[in-house]
Length: 147
Image 1: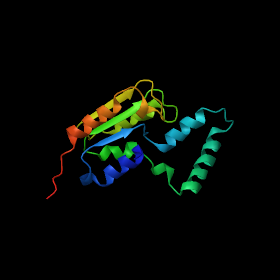
Image 2: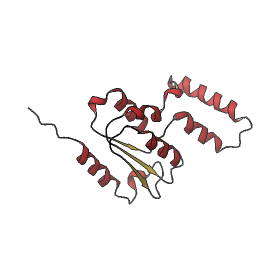
Image 3: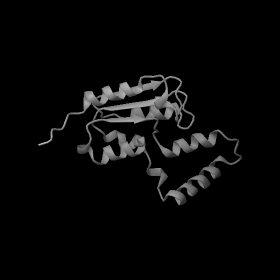
Image 4: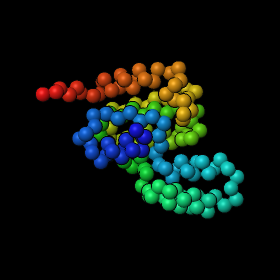
């Protein structure tokens, strides 16, 4: 599931989660949009941002200001592994680092940077990411016995 959704779900229903692994996510949606707009020589960036955000609201019927993973993660009290590629062009590396820093109440948190990974290829690089995520789940998830 997407990182923003996972952070939101874990914050809203903490008893349902034992641990969380978030891959290639962000601290705030508005921040990601601002980053993308900065890539283009737009004569009126503030106006362009307002138009784009209004269009997003119309398309998805969402309040983009509420998509704040860094806000939700502050209340998460389970172990958290945050993974991000250092070549991610869709969600810049610093957004992932900001998200990691926001897990202030997580008893165990770990940052894992994947060298050479972008947004769309992070799970298919030569880095042993699946092994790292599997170890994380095995370390922090209790088994549930069927009765």
